[in-house]
Length: 202
Image (cartoon, rainbow, N blue to C red; front, side, top):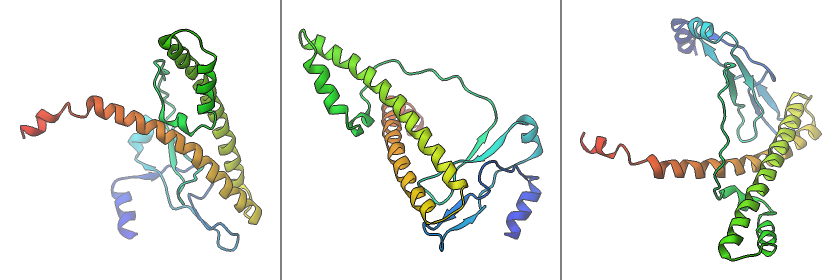
């Protein structure tokens, strides 16, 4: 620990502080065994702080780990462009309504095979948009409730509901992981071998 403190001093790194919960690590699902500590911190030097004077660190809600993630916000937002082309998403099959939705669209479509497939495509596009909005609201509600529980006094009821909220949030996060895994594989297939010649020549 002394060596770590020396490294911080030598590099002129300062504690940036935090917002939300004071603790960044918690263990124990029962009141008698529940422990909270501030183990994780964000540090930066004065040059970095002068470049990002509005930067803040948040202890954000967590469900998978004993440690909470530290979110560093520099107040610079990137413009997001929604993806408009149709793609089958792996997370769709995790939705209970998916199979019934496909069957309903198909049964209520007319025309030849290509026309019916086009109606299924458009129908699934609309259905996916509704599900995404619903999931976003659900995650916001779960996250908001998780924050309330984490900031509340610990008792047996609080810890039981805390565990339940984490399980529900984990399930929703699992759907997001399916989405990003699919995106990562598409990118690897498209770009993964572009530098092969460089490595072969080394």
